[in-house]
Image (tube, rainbow, N blue to C red; front, side):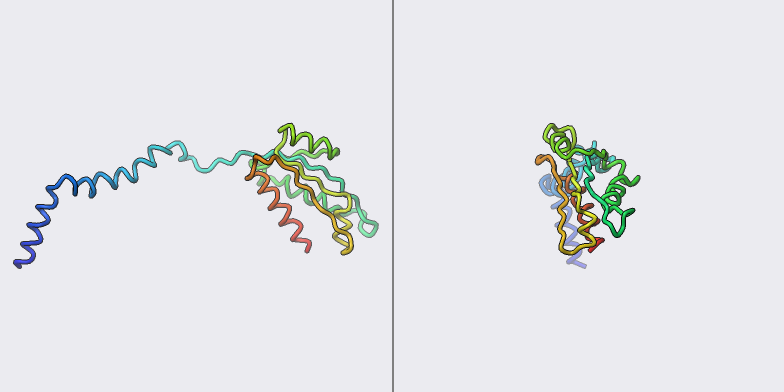
Length: 157
């Protein structure tokens, strides 16, 4: 019992020290409270700015399947209702105008689907490249578009 008496006496002596009390009570509260006070405006969650996307669909059908266009399927993926808060999609016909819109910062990304996109799905000797023309200052929006295109094309392989 003598050891417990010594422990309690030492504990009572230590708790009278302002230095110990500051490290036990004040600093943990400050450590949790300062980030809360600094970032209390972020309590609504993460806000992602919508990305303005222009799609140029130059895709042409192939003779074997005249009613099928892979470019149209890709555009349907981007116009999904679940993505309406993240992507604003416009479809245009002129590739040069889409590139100019990106350079003038009217849109964030231009997606150019080549004329032989559907043909490249059925003919292994044909290689089509989808062009993603983006504002170099942006990363999140073009990254979302790039991943969607990659997932779409991987589905055909």
